[in-house]
Length: 251
Image (cartoon, rainbow, N blue to C red; front, side, top):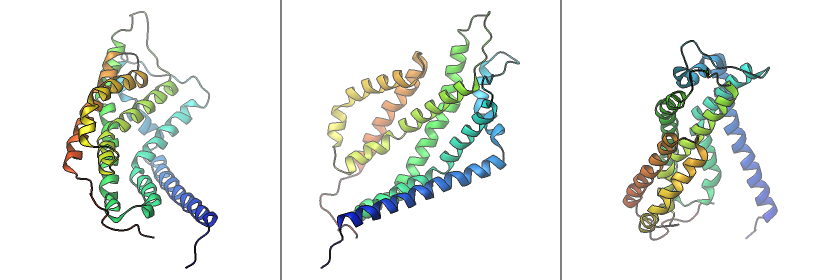
């Protein structure tokens, strides 16, 4: 029985990784080209800017201080949108890379995991856009003195938006993480319940670091994180970790 040298195995893994990364990048770029042609970066950015514009005084617009900022910022927004749309393909490529080392009962989690992860990430971004931005921007604008006319820089705005989208998108993935921790046997539902208090404290610490220094935005991130942690425990309690390995790893 011949054995495969470790160096050959390592190289084959690198080749497979490169192939999966290339497919993920190509999928994002294809969506980016389509969105760039229609509806166009300007339309996408205008939609993203609506929560901020709604909180500004009538007739006030955001400003661009850089020479190429009016071009680069809408392109960044379009690229972010492309990534979100192509997220199922990106997640599938990541799963396909690690799938050969998994058992069959673990591979059956692929489709539910990809779909639920994508849905929850988009729900997190939607919650941030429709609830958090509207609440936080109006709250901040209400504190502006009458002698000041707010005119946010579009580059600073988009950096803030991307950070918040990422924070809320990851936050809404908490139920998936909890279920996987239990499903893989790393921890148990009982232990997750025991550390509930620490999770609440950690949620508010994370919210304080990620969000602006106001109580409302911190609460709007920490509260969903705690709630979703409980939701994850509920679903994890419904899933029993396999007691025995049902099938061997496929070569």
